[in-house]
Amino acid sequence: MGYHLRRAQISFFNDFENSMGGVQITPGQFGVITLIAVNPGLTQLALARAVGIERSTMVAVIDVLESRSLVERRPSPVDGRSYALVRSAEGSDMLKQLKPMVLEHEKRVTANLDPEERSQLLRVLSKLTHERH
Image 1 (tube, one colour):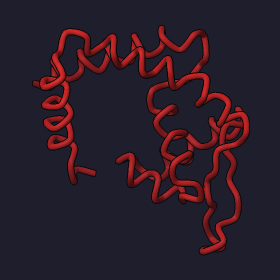
Image 2 (cartoon, rainbow, N blue to C red; image 1 turned 90 degrees about the vertical axis):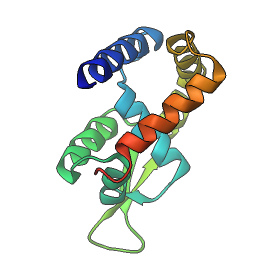
Image 3 (cartoon, rainbow, N blue to C red; image 1 turned 45 degrees about the vertical axis):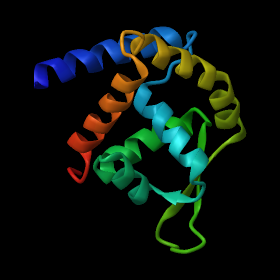
């Protein structure tokens, strides 16, 4: 099973990279920017938990996105020891540019599945990842 999941991931990631029109962004980075966009002010720790990665790994991801001016760290109004994450204007522009490409990519990589199979795949993947982080 692990072999097939990994092969699917590689295929998915390769198509994602080829679909982004030369924009250098990974599926993980796109997901992080999207989560920040719909949850402005989220802390790095909360984001790491939502994505299911270690806080230190999330710090590195945010460092990259911040260095590209796609997200900003701001002092948290709730906890002075942490940062609130927001997408920048450049991050908003990038999301607008990439969303149609990502939708087309997802349509392409699931083209062999009928709508019920797509729904079933999402349910199964959700079950496999639920509460494992």
